[in-house]
Length: 147
Image (tube, rainbow, N blue to C red; front, side):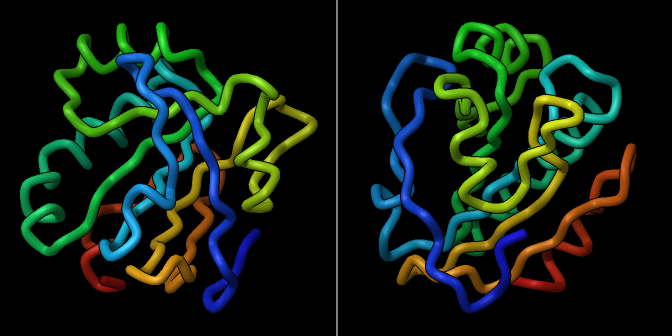
């Protein structure tokens, strides 16, 4: 997994609205990359619902939150609408898992990214990274402690 102090690999992915989003679009702001395995899975559903509840406070602290999984933009749209999620959900769909691989989070065994958080500072450097144990997601308190 990528470590604090490393340059964050840039990427361009489609969001749930089919718009291209690049990490470099947010230069000058902190970005929290929320890697999660799959839309509509029980743990991921709970995780993004909790993060959505705290999204206003994260944004007030100057953090842009981007969800990333290997699902398609169309699946992200349905998932986001189902949950009422307003954060951008990015499709690491084709080539499948390319961004997850760049961040050291790809699992060949499961064909998806591991659940992880990567905080990128305003200059594009990883300032904090955390990989969750299986079937657990990091509480927002952990995020706030590491801002």
